[in-house]
Length: 156
Image 1 (cartoon, rainbow, N blue to C red):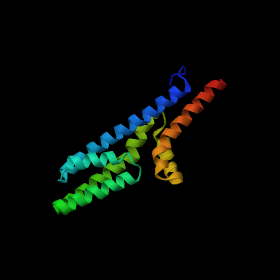
Image 2: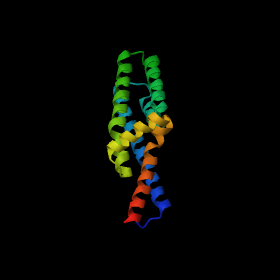
Image 3: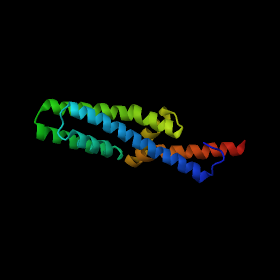
Image 4: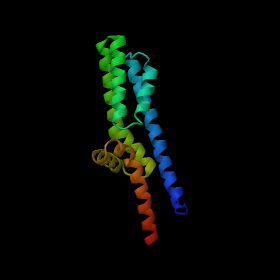
């Protein structure tokens, strides 16, 4: 961060980085869903992938709602257990990548935090504050980081 920036500008820059990181994660997840759902022959795979990707903006409930959309759509329309299994595997892989790699790595890089710190702050945020804690853990930690760096620069 530029030490010449005002505090509100630095906080704004940090929060913009959080939004950009969230959008990147959703785009990547949508791509993963699209490839997996197409390979699994999920009906309306592109639309279902887009909805499932966008639902990842909503912590905890969004991915659950996505699963509750893709499995019934696939099971009721295709009536093919291999397609349902493929959709479920796609979902599990996408969620695993998101939780253990994409969010910590992308969010950490964008906010200037270690991926492990991002992972732990989201975990603790979720345990203490539930879904809102998951959603706001990274931006709150990033703003706290801005304030911490500011206070350290002021004391030097």
